[in-house]
Length: 453
Image (cartoon, rainbow, N blue to C red):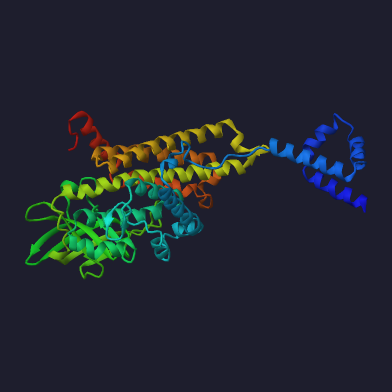
């Protein structure tokens, strides 16, 4: 019986042994002699030896650091309530979205069943006051955008269109009656919104060249024209349509309700980015909209710009999230992928890419964090938001490119996620103001001269 106890203890010890290392040791010492000595130990001596070896193993064990793109711990600046919301959104994205993200992206379909689950997070209109909205600092709008995009930029875009552009248009430009009618139901995602500004022939120049028109006829308005790239438009319950008033040549905003006879939305196919987002080409033919559904505080493009200024900050955060998702996916891969008998994370060139990615992420985080602080202080300007959009969308391009590079051929496979981040970064680079237009906004602010044509 005593013999079997010893065998049991020896077997347990053997599990702790690195046999490759043991082979090297055997060249230097007499292992058979040591094994014989171990066999002569009594039970208490064996237990003591096991304890000593276990403690040494723990002390010498190589613990890999966690995978976390927040290297300067900006998230520690959040209070307990804010941190809880962040973690709630992160869990939702990792458990509900991550397992299905690639499949829906590949099929260019939207997972409609996630909407009621998302509603339970209570994050729509997070920075708005009243109407069932949480009324939290704008920093939380940014944190949420980052967390969503860190897993799936498409879901982040769906949310940004609904909560930011659509709800934001009503919140900033709607009458009290319109806010009461729409915002509570949009906040709990009972109703979904879309935002129609960009047109087939006019993108960045829409402020001065809007082709969609509106004209008042008695107590209603008649709208005609087309809008392109309108996210959520194939299934939204309300679409914010911006149109040029033929009488005063000023931009007006309208609440176009689902089912309007003059409204047609055709899904845009064959996209290389944001494939889960249901973008549409909207055709508006003699759409009759009552005066009560005209946004009462939207009377010029300056009012439209208020919405864009607010949401452009969120897009900069979204760019950070996309880059962070790519970086963390690539870092995780380099720790598992082995070449020449060791993880590729041990190679100098790989570490160079990882560090440059992390440096970009850290600089982006500093910029967007300050951007949201300015927003919370009421100091945010167009040029502030534009600079963040320019810088973050450019740096995101660099990060996702490096992430794809460290993964080699596997970097182009959807199953490793980075390929999706690479593609989606291209959409972030263009929407909510191109790099060139946002550059000119900042350029005008710092030189005092407008270079716009």
